[in-house]
Image (tube, rainbow, N blue to C red; front, side, top):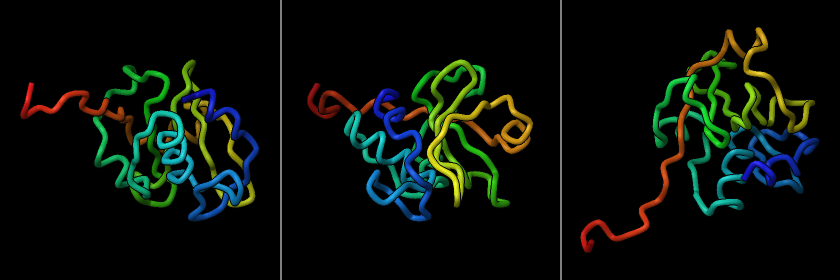
Length: 129
């Protein structure tokens, strides 16, 4: 999954965007990566992605986990994918492109609002074990 995400470095930001051809916004980028690399369809908006994933502590982050930020006066207004070593990949904002940033940078530390893990899909039918 992270390899796929890294191939999209430099793709321009586009509000409402969800493809490498037209550009990505933050949640469209996350949704695209999960759908194309592991077949998981996440909701379209960052706040909805936060609601449908498992809350974890920041010190429990693993590569592939989601990191959320308050960048627009909303708790879960921005999302990225943790890649390890304190870094995450995301589609930041208008005029910028998909890039890697450091969670420890003052800007992101101040705005960090939580981490989430995408649950594994059920591999068996729970009604017929």
